[in-house]
Every structure is written in structure tokens, then in C-alpha cells.
Amino acid sequence: MDSVDELDRITDAKVLLRVLPGIAADTHPALATGDTGQKFGLGEGELRRALDVLGGRPDLELVGLHCHIGSQIRHVATYEQAARRMVGLIARLGRPVRELDLGGGFGVAYTSAEAEFDLVGYAERVKRAVRYECGVHRVPEPQLVVEPGRAIVAKAGVTLYRVTSVKHPFVAVDGGMSDNARPALYGARYQPRLLRTGPTARMVLVGRHCEAGDVIAEVDLPRDVHPGDVVAVPVTGAYHHSRASNYNQVCRPALVGVRDGTTRVLVRAETEEDLLRRDVG
Ligand SMILES: Cc1ncc(COP(=O)(O)O)c(C=O)c1O
Image (cartoon, rainbow, N blue to C red; front, side):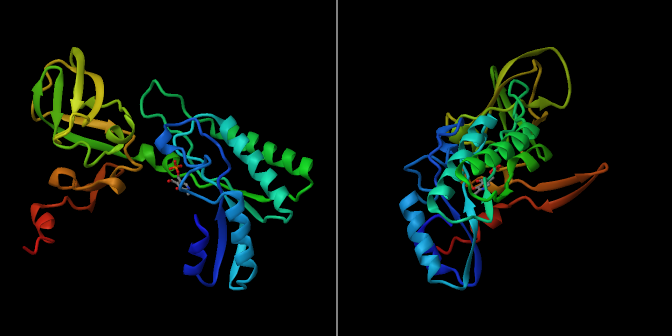
């Protein structure tokens, strides 16, 4: 939970209290969620108040403390720092904590220029940091919990667009910021490919929406790219379908599962009828 008054809205539950460890994570500012002054999590004073409230609520069982310092974090050192802060906090509270949940956020490479997050290094170094700090502060070692999201599913998704028009260097496709908000929100960039080869030129892949910021990638594509070509954008399995919107009243695309060469529609494409269904005027 993120605020003390949320405790009034739950009954008979196991509770992890989310705290702000005060870490400015090495990621885009919009993805950093563990620094002081954030809307997420509890500061130390609020945490103490939440613990007082829990003291009078036998139906709520405190399982542990939680923090999620952000997403697309690249360096293990950032998590080590968070882990050390969390153990320091546990020591100051003066009560043992069964679980310490350090959230997710492990960075995923969207292009070949980006490094992969060192997951094995994370496991070893964060465990070591927690053990060391618990020894220093003489508190029992909590059970460590992680909540990876993107790192599990991002690479399982590929977005397919149809090229609708070409005006060098711009290649426009039949989707964009309504199915992928990341470029417009954080300036994220991708490494799309055309489903055929040929001599290439630098192109700007743009979406269909009425925004100059609706840019998916600057990328080398076959010079003769033309309407009807299919462009594949890899690493779109996380925060794409789930965040798709009707921006500019564009219908959301279908979600198709692929396994062993067979396909199955998991979510059908939206139709204009779907969009108009709420119109009662
Ligand atoms: C509390 C919490 N835990 C875990 C995650 C997963 O983050 P990621 O997908 O970056 O690993 C999120 C994402 O928003 C979150 O809010």
C-alpha cells in the first residue's frame, strides 16, 4: 500500500508497507519511483503512523516492507543502495521484518545499443548487501522478494505495423502512440525491421496520430520501403497492449498468441462500433 488511509479500505489481509527509500534511480525521471517527494510509498514518518494503525488492527498481518525504486534501471549498484537503505530503516524501526520486497525494474534492452541488465549479478550482490547490512545493524535477515515485470514479458512481444505512406525520410505506419505510448512519454526508441531485405537508408518511422512526437524509431530500412510493407517492432511485450488507448479515437489492435508456428487471437481488434458504443447522444 502507498498511503496510510488505504489501511481503512482493507480487511483481513496480509500487508506489505511500501516505503520510499530516497533513491534517485538511474532511469528516466518519469520512471523513478523511489526518491523522496514521490507520490508512491510512505516516508519514514508515515511508515511509523501506518505501523501504529496496524498495531490496532488484528485482522491485518504485517508481512514486511516493500519498495519499488523505478523501472528500466540499468545498474545493480542502484539496488544495492536501496537494499542498504531498507535494512537501515528496518534497524531504526527496531522490529524484525519477515519479508523485504525490493520490487522490480530490471532494465530491458530495446535496441542492440543498450546493455542487458545483469540479473545474476543482481541476485548475488543484493543478497550479499542485505546480509552484510543485517550483520552490521544486528537485525534478522528478512526473506528477499522481487517483482520483475518487464524483464519477464517484454521480449515475448512483437508489434506488427503496416506501412501506410512513405515521404523520405518518413515512413508512416498504421499504429503508433495509441498502441505504444513509450516514445511519446519517455522518448523511448526501438529497433524495427522490415520483413524483407534490400539496400538501406536512414528512415524515421512515425505513427498515424496527430502529434509530431508520434515517432517510433530512427532506423535503417530498405530504401524501397513502400505502403503495404510490414514492419516488426521487437520487445513490445510489456506496457504496450496493457497501455493501449483510443488516443485520437484510433481503435486498439488485436493481440495474437504465437506458439510452435500456430497463431491464436487472444484479444480481437477493436472496431469503430466498439468506440461508438458509449456514445449516448
Ligand atoms: C510495485 C511495482 N512492482 C513491480 C513493478 C514491475 O516493474 P518492471 O516492469 O519495471 O520490472 C511495478 C511496475 O510499475 C510496480 O509498480
